[in-house]
Length: 179
Image (tube, rainbow, N blue to C red):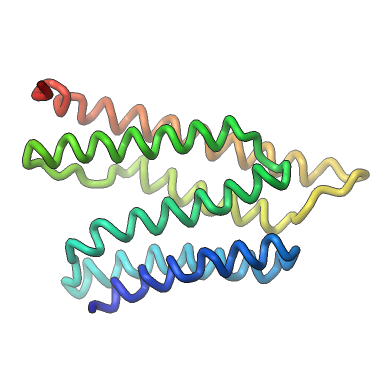
């Protein structure tokens, strides 16, 4: 097993640790685990490319690990009342739609690489989720955390929708060959 794949598996293992800490109210520790998990995403990609450790397992598991990490954090924020459920639904819809398009492309013998907008979306989402973890639970007398949470949710939504539209537009020819 490559170093890059070990880092991806490590990220997956960190997801339940993050959730346990978040639900236990240990937001500082939850933030630290989330940051470490997010950084392994950048690190495993760098290692895979730089040291020629690109594998089929990594191509499948790396984006899945990212999606599960982000969705776990967003589910926590929905349940905590820091993010509306419809925002999570939009993000899930985009992720399922992009994954579906990739499957259609694979059937045609085509691999669709991640677009720059998708990388921006992932980075923005992880930064926004870190901000939301950093501000902690809302206090009745302080509107700043609510503003930060709402702003973060808006950034996540805008980058998600933008990258999804760009992804489908640039690869719209995939559907021309569908029976």
